[in-house]
Image: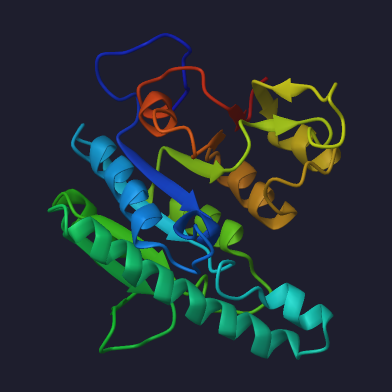
Length: 246
């Protein structure tokens, strides 16, 4: 679904997939901050109450980064499985925060842990969404060598999400690092091919390619501005839209 810049009275999407990094749950030196996690939960509740079907993919970088560990000498497959377990911890923390504010939530994991979360079953996930439950996808794809960005692209395609909302610490995609280059240009819109060709490192190339092949648009935005998540789903021009068209 195409995002428009004008304000709407209703959300412009029906079903979204929100991609969160693990770091958004941390704060004040904590790996997982109850305060920060509650802030994220309240923002999700706000858009959920608008009638949106909301799925979430969450990373584990606040606890463990498999790629970093592999660069330090650990076996990459082992390191990646450890990272998947970290995402499960984060998913449970977010579920707890959501259910404390009366948002019914299900966690589905790509690695089977029966006592902790449901296994990922596509049809069941879609049924949960139809029943107005937030679904949190954890443990990545269940396979090493794939990022949680790729997981987001895969799950969004599987559940028929209208868009991936990629929450970051910056207000969109730039042509160079805005921290290093004060003249860096922020894109309001960009195509998948341009993002791949220019190696814009907001999502990895596998994730971009999967979104391109399945025509799933991506909005990259700053999650740390409280109004941004709601503004995005209401059709305001926030962040950078990545899609088929310029």
